[in-house]
Structures are given as structure tokens and as C-alpha cells.
Length: 263
Image (spheres, rainbow, N blue to C red):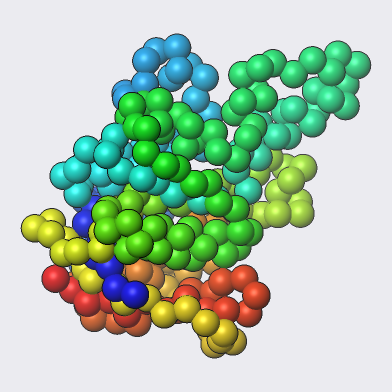
């Protein structure tokens, strides 16, 4: 299966967006892992902006950047959102309330707690009536989401937006599920090359126990510490304009292999 990457959105420590992050990932600029700043999306009305959680802010930021980079209309794109655990802050707050004497959960907290909340906000913000799938696959969430989005793009013959995001949990959950940093990536995947295509990717999927493709030492803690950041070897290859094969683990002892060609 072959497809093309037409747009990229990026947010992570020291990687404010794709324009700033690409030369860093390519090795032509120094990397300084400064904290990630999340802001409410201007695509939403003030009332919705006030209800946005950080996961929604992150997902909408990288998604809208990827679509703008591709020069497409967000309302026309099917989407796949993938995260290893969703909004741990909201879940922790709800559990704390349920363990208290009051036990009254606000409707806003409840609707922000569901795994497809970012995709729902995305549909509202972009006025999109296209399909949207939300995926959770633990440490394999990026590779599962990538395969889902790629399959959809090829089968439907149209571009698809992939949004992958994860962020640290509060202390209670962090003790059993540490995620080291905020990281999100948006990719517009197309079945055909276009004037803005950045790279071609040939996908292979099957059983394999080989190692994942690592990053240079400065980036490896981020790649290994955030499931969405498993995308970094792919992004670094595109940024460098290098032909390279990247391996990313999937569930069930499988391996996703991406052969990248620069365009």
C-alpha cells in the first residue's frame, strides 16, 4: 500500500510547529526541549473555547496545522484521531469527585472525558460532517491510527486527516502509566501525489520481532516516552528529505514498516 503525505502539524517540547520543528528534526538546527504551550483553538466560539481541555487544544492545533499545510478544507476530510489514553486529567477529576461525598459530575466534565471528545470538537470547529474514527491502542496507538487512516485514504480514494496525541497524566495515574512529555502530530494522507506532497510512503504490515527505529540521543527519550512520538522517525526522515525505512511496533507482535521516499 502506497500513499502520500501532503501536510504535517506538530507540537511538542521544543517543536512548536512543523515549520520550526522540521530543521531541528533534520539536524540543521539545535534542539532545545522547551515546554509545550497549548492555547484554545480560534476555530471555536468563545463558549466552546472555555470548555476545551488540553487534549482538545493539542489535537485541534496539530490537526488544523496539517490541513492548512496541505492547502485543503478541513470540512471535506474524513479523520482518524488516536491516543493511548485520552484525557487523564479529566478522568482523574471525575474519579476524585465520585470518591467524595458530593459525587456530582458536571456534564462538561463528562463529555470531555470520553475518548472521542477531541474529534467531536474538531467536527464542531470545522463544520465537518465527514466520518471520524477515534482509536486507542496503548503504546501502539500511532501505528494503529496510521494504518487505519492509510487504509481509509486508499480504499476511499481521497485524503484523510490523522491526528495522534498524548500527554502526561496526573500523579496518581502517572505512577502506573508514565508519559513523559506533551506531543501531538497531524498528518494529511493522500492516495495520490499532489503539488504539496512532501513524501511517498509504502506501507508493509505483518509479524515481526525486530526493533523499532530509534531517534538520535537528544530525541530518543521523547520518542520512547510518549506513544504519539513514535511518529518521530517518520517525521525526521521527511524533514531531512531522506529515503529511509522506518519500523514501528504494533500490537500482537506485528511490525509496521514505512518505506519513505522524498519528493
